[in-house]
Length: 255
Ligand code: ATP
Figure 1 (cartoon, helix red, strand yellow):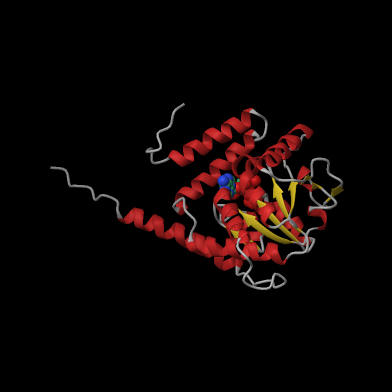
Figure 2 (cartoon, rainbow, N blue to C red):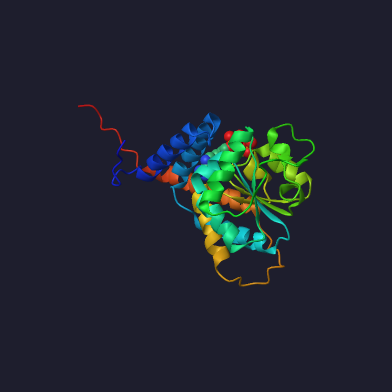
């Protein structure tokens, strides 16, 4: 199918084509396509761009990753299909960051496919293909992790997460940075630092920040107001909906 770059939904449509292809190769599961649809709907409501508040969250996230002793980026099939390059940029800019495959729908073949996509994008070492530890109290395959990665991480960047694991990580005292377009999801509401933005944009901005020299001492944790970040996103949606509603054409009385 040929898409015109002039089509108003060009970007979103080409992303869908890429995800459908990734589904056919086994990288993305059917459930991942549906989850993407939920994300797309929120992105539509948010104006398909990074808000100033989300951009501040991304800068704070880069600071937290820098300040961490054992930072980890957790990668599932959708993240590998949408943003492998951005993950590789983060890993290059901050070599201390571990990159780990973590899947809700895990098969050995899918784990290898995710790792392959990351390696082709330039990630040197990918953890989690053969899990070596388990996070207690988490029933899904998300519990299966690498002893050198998520298991011992102090800061976990978890794009497109599910709420259960975000809660489990927090219970273990690990700081959770989420990337989720839905400000109402359990993940966003659980995270210490929720980023309400599209994953490719969010990880790209974090990489931009990490590629610049640090302005403050990397040992310093900047406080982050998570509740404020979520209400900013809801206000953005509210403002846009109100504006759209105000533009509603008034019905002409019938002649
Ligand atoms: P929770 O368990 O946190 O309440 P959920 O049941 O909505 O979440 P999933 O279906 O696992 O969770 O998650 C997909 C989440 O990822 C959705 O909240 C969706 O908004 C978000 N999402 C999907 N695609 C993207 C994307 N490209 N960028 C950012 N977020 C996305």
